[in-house]
Length: 298
Image (cartoon, rainbow, N blue to C red; front, side, top):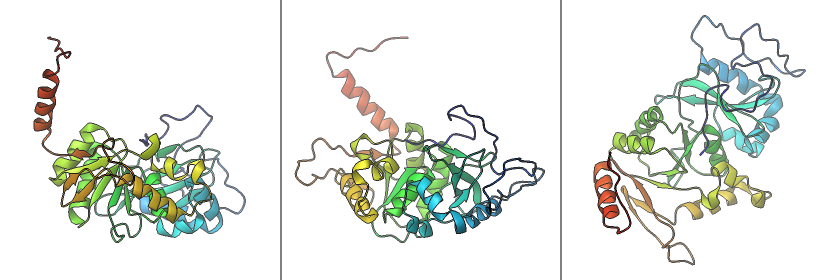
C-alpha cells in the first residue's frame, strides 16, 4: 500500500525547504523560462484550485517531465484533471495532482517525486483523486490508495479513483460511491478500520483483492520492468484479468471464480462487510475448535 504522509514525514533526510505552495519569500529559483510556484498569501486560507491551476499551467513546457515522474505516457496526461508540475519544490521537481472533497472542490495538492515518494502539500485536507470520466468507463471501478495509483490505472484505460485509506477517506469515498451506479473493487492493502468504515457507510459489502505478484501497489505493477514497451491499454487488460478472476461482483454479492487454466482454489475472495461482529464470532468459533489453539487469560 502506498501511503501519503503529511509534508516532511517519511522522506530520506535531505536539505529541503518546504512547503507547497511556496510563500512569497521563498528563495528557490525555478528553471529558466518556467513560471515560479504560485505565491500564496499565508494570512488567508489557501485557494487550492488556484494553486493547482498554476502548476497545471507549467505543463505547457513540462508535459513530458510530469508524465515521466508519474511513470505514464505523455498522451495520458489529458485524462488526468489538474495534473501539473512544480520545477522547484525544495531544489527538486515534482508532479502535482489535486485532491477534491465529495462535492468536487479542490482541497489540497499531492506532490510526487522521481524517487516514487508522495507527500501532501502543507495545509492540504484529505481528498479523493477523481480522473476525468472515471464514472463513464465501462466495467468495475478500481479503488486504490493515493492519486498516483489512480493516475496510472487511468493511463491504462481503466476506471479508477484514488482515496486516502483512512476513516476520513472512507467518509469521502462513501459519498461518491452512493451517487454512482457502478461496481467498485478495492485493490491493495487497506487498514481494517478503514475497510469496515467504508462498508458501514455505503451499507453494502465491498469486495477487495490484493495487487498481483506481491507488487507494492498497482503503479508498481503497471510499470514493472517486464511490462516496459508494452502498450498501456494492454497492461490494463492484463491487470484486470489478474484482478477479477478471484471474485465476481454482482449486485454486491461476491463469489469465487476459477481463473483461466486453474481451479481458483488458491485465489480467495475477500469481502469487506458491515457485519464485523458476525465475522468475529465465526472466527472465534473456528479458532476454539482447533485442538492446538489456546486462549490466554488477562
